[in-house]
Image (cartoon, helix red, strand yellow):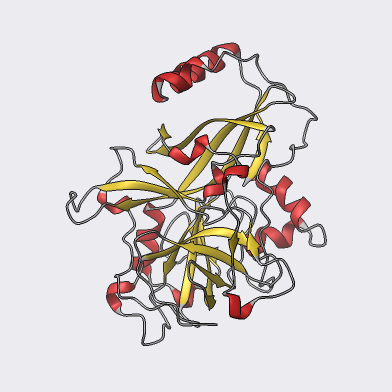
Length: 346
């Protein structure tokens, strides 16, 4: 998750407060009062994120390039994704914008993550995505430090408020999740502090069928070596550059731009890799990521897959990206709720 400060005009702030009041419950709206316009703390400097989840550059040798004949999309391995899948995932990529108030300063902070939309169960309209899914830590904030205001995304030029019931929790409400089975225990800290790091909510009615992800089939078996990609909409470039300088100070910005495909004509990137470990509730993989990727949907790619991945599995969602593993050189994501994937071991 990536954080910046915004300087709102009085008119913008009043309009924003009215939007929030109209989209929250009555009890919630009564507890909220208009806040003064916010100013930059230090010009060019972004305050720390309230979430503090690390990301991992697992493969600095990779470079993201524009996908051939698919405008606005990049990937760091063209050989793992065909053009039809590339066009499809581009339509499903959405940036999540989170507003929170820093209680100590009373300033509005804007954080960035990712969000995906999913179809409901078989009783729902099969052509209408019903659910929004992101990382739980994108909407559960630090206790006594931040107050959640709203989460929203942009669809065809308009912003829509997304409702996540978990936003009323704080980190103290979340039970850390062990990333290894008891037989694989380690003296090192092997718990993910954000628990099973998935938050679900309702999808805006304007989301169309082509903008929704399908979950992989219920009897799918995840295993090491399966090729995956995380679909990431790029945050504002100045915010991203500020974050990358702090995350990877040993690398120059030009190299980081190449690794992550940060260009003015790039709307989204797919960072590819393969599964390196399958846990009971999570998977681990060697795809690159940066601060702002949390909540990205992890999909099965359609090239160079082992026999365990069938054609009907291509492009299907298997997990929600969470962040860097606490002590292994890899990233991890939590399996999407409702997927009955079996654990095949390390």
